[in-house]
Length: 250
Image 1 (cartoon, helix red, strand yellow):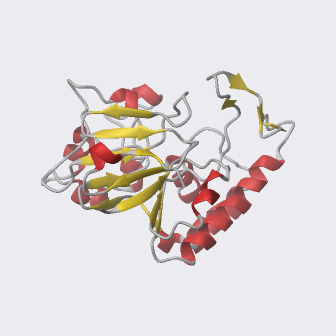
Image 2 (cartoon, rainbow, N blue to C red):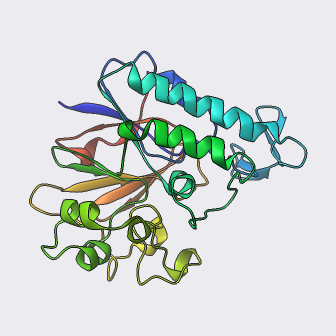
């Protein structure tokens, strides 16, 4: 069995710390900054408070500052271990490259955040592959891979694609690109008749985050992959991913 832990979109939250004592492999799926303006409560209702703290930025702007400290702690954690992978999300790419924007971007602290990412660029990756499992921030579709790879191979596409091609956004998420890349693909864009998730002789299953799910701990399944809720840590066996994905119980 090759069990690993998957930690989806952080957005300033500290639920990841539950995995600090886990001795196995851990993969973060990106989006470390830019906290939500709201959270869902346990009944799926919008709330303006999270852990007793007002979420609205004009009232509690320090939430953005605490996000940076949280990211620094995640980076230190990854550097202290040889089995922690940090992936990049769309909310990370827009600090690395000028002209890229996702919601809630911290323009005030942009120089500080960009410097932090660049200083530690060697530990951040665009994807993770082990055994039969592919992890990206938002998922990789057949359409996107076909567009940017002459061989039709995901690793070829992601290695050759320019930053703006990885950051491509379809009309579903308000963009104008032909299809969304692995930083922006929405799980609701993936259907049985079009825009299917990429697989090949090695990659049999994908797990990704990016799209907010209402029910805490939920898994939104698609053919050959799944989107996981961003408030829980999940575990999976990389050799049998489709049948083993579940919320981690320490």
